[in-house]
Length: 265
Image (cartoon, rainbow, N blue to C red; front, side, top):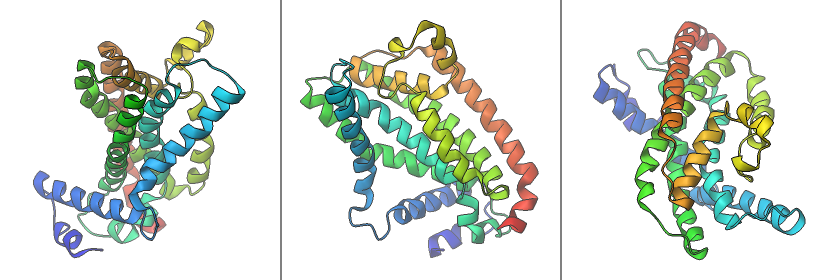
């Protein structure tokens, strides 16, 4: 534990002190994520970019989708998905990986999944310039719709935090959750319009896909980035409210299970 983190943990109850603690946690998580790696934080770019290359070969050379600007099309979806997937996957072990903090008196334990969510958002921001580069290569231009991007970030952040808090609480008590999440996230990936568009989903299935929050987030992200389309504000607002309910429920469950965390770490 760093000296800065120790200092910020001393009876931190005020909002300002907790913000300092969260910043220290995010900084530590960010540094530790790729510690000892040759490429370091560049993996935040290489990982989704590698997936884009593989999928582009599959769906332009083997199976033809005929989607214009396919590289930018894929990457514009992979970035928000990578933020969500990595945060949820990592949250399953964040309490057990930080047992010293879990056992620290007065430490607000929900900040651990919060730090995971924030760290993966920073990695998203690190990879975002690559998307701008792909758009330039494909002759796509930035538009006024880009002003809606922070709203999309806020909605996804609320949803992602709701899931990470819940998974963190369950994951410390049921260690199989980290393995189960790998399978569920793979299924979730294919049920999300990442390498295809929602318009390509059969009408009979479209209403089921509309129950997927990441489908709405990714469609909004892609529309803003590539097509200059402002998001469906009503749909985005609905998911923001649902995300708030999920987050509130997750925090309630987290608090109910919190006494058992020390015994499990």
